[in-house]
Length: 105
Image 1 (cartoon, rainbow, N blue to C red):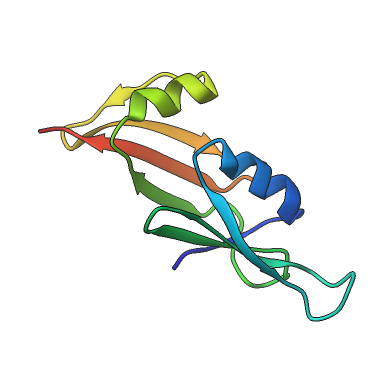
Image 2: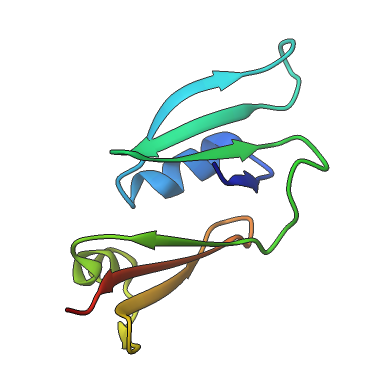
């Protein structure tokens, strides 16, 4: 399961909610310590970590969806066509890259 580095888990969870992800749980070793959060959209899950060293910035995750046009409309970005899919590329608030695509048939 991909782990993405985030500065503020609550901000990241709100951003990923726009992609249909829902927070599953949050763990902190003690109050005020960095958060480690799982978010999921159906069977697809991601970890978001405030812990320094858990993941590198500028990570790329590829997500396949049924309707890339809906994602493009939600984020106001154009769809590009590649031989394998129609895609958009997004950056979350922490600079992690998400390529979201609907396979061409």
